[in-house]
Structure formats: C-alpha cells, structure tokens
Length: 318
Image (tube, rainbow, N blue to C red; front, side, top):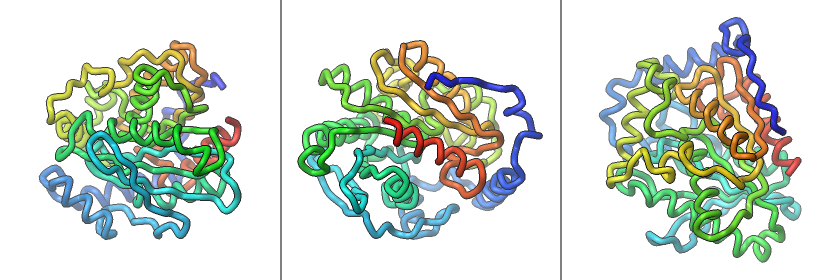
C-alpha cells in the first residue's frame, strides 16, 4: 500500500495503448451522434439504458443476481445481491455511478459478476434514489441505510463480517460519504477497504473538470455541471463535506484503492483525493492508466483488464 507514484510519461500520448485509443474514439463517435444530450430528462435516459437503447451496451442479466428490499429513511430501498457458489469470503457494498441521476445495479451486472467470480465476495449493489426527483441527501441516506443493514445482517445472511465498499464516479463519492457518515453518526468503522474508481469528490468542480471542454468522452464539462445541478436541486451545497467528500475529515478511514484514466475529466478529483487520503493517515494505492476514459474499467481492452486485476488483488488482500 501507500503507492502513489506518478510519472510524467504516463500522461503523454505515447504511453496510450492502441486499443485504448480505439475505445476512446468509438465512445466519442457514439456520443457525438446524439444531438442535444443535455436536453433529455434523466428519467428518459434511465428507461432507454435499461431497455438496451443507450449509447453503451446493456450487459447480459446476471443469473446469480437476486433482488431484495430494505427499509430506508425515505421508504423501501432496493438491493441487488450477487452470491458466489461457495460461502462468501466477504461482502462488497457497491454504489453505482451515473452522476447521482442515472444508472442502476442492473447495468452493473457484468462488473459485479466479475467481482464475485474473481474474489469470492458476495456483492450487494444499492439502487439508491436518484436526482432530480430525489436530490441530496436522499441518495446518500439510502446508501447509509444499506451499509447499516449490512452491518446488522451480514453474519446471519452471508456468514461473514468482512466488508469492503466501493463505486464508480458518483458511486465513489457516495462510498466516501457513507464511510464518513458511519464513523461520525454511528461510531462505526466496519469496512476493511474501499475501491474508489474515477470518483467525483469535489462538486465545486476541480480544474480538470472546468478545463475539459466539450469532447464527449463519456463525460464532459457540461455533463458534470448539469449532474451537479440536479443533485443539489433540493438546496444542497457543494461546500458541504457530505456533498463534496474531498472537504471532509478523512481520518480513520480504511485502506483505499484509487484508479482513474488520464483522459478523464475527473482526473484531478482522484489525484487530489488519493493525496488527502494519505495525508489523513490512511493507506492508499493509486493507479493512473494512460489514456483511460471515464470509468474505463467497464470497457474492454488492456487498460480495463489491468485495473480490474489490481482491484481484484486489493479485495483479495483485505
């Protein structure tokens, strides 16, 4: 752990693998073909993605996934649970990405099946409430409720009290907020590790977000600005550490594995947060992949394979 080593060569064009370039070009082409993406309401985007009509393929439905519902502060909160064939070695609480506005556990079936297969963990993915219909703090409230449910029920349901937490993009933001809430509100530190992929940790917008521009490589500046506005439409503030966990007291949190690609508008968020994690006295490991786009771990190719292998190793080592 504690391996945050950056090389300037990793940020140069010559370090980008050929297959990574091809993936990036295909993503830009697919998204550039959608006119006025910002004018489509999140509810319409959600429906299209679950019907397989989004810009990215919907993975095959997991044969092992089972749906459950728990009670949360805003009503029933669905969970999607993926179980290994043998007794779980641990439980990974997964919080999906999507700018706090779109996305679902179902769209992560492939990635969550992979974690089960390669680590022996069970995965519990939270279908938290989404903005703008349910702005902050409803989403993180659901995630907090799911974490508390896991602490209470895991030994009886899964036969283990070995936990990890993680997510991608907005999900990584919610994962850190959940860790801080459990520590501060409940005196709990139940998670042995965190996997934080391409997180949006500062909703005031870091320099890499502000300077990215219009290139639609999964996300651009306009997309992130719009998602933040939806998430905070209930009166939340980007200055609130519960919203922007980069601003939170990070002391006493578990070891974390951070990964981000150099071609991600949210690059600075991970660079800044991984450094703050270490400065707060927590173990941290950082993998920066040359040319990787936003949440590149969900795309085929050498960059995703490398990062996912490191994630598996991190979870197996907890």
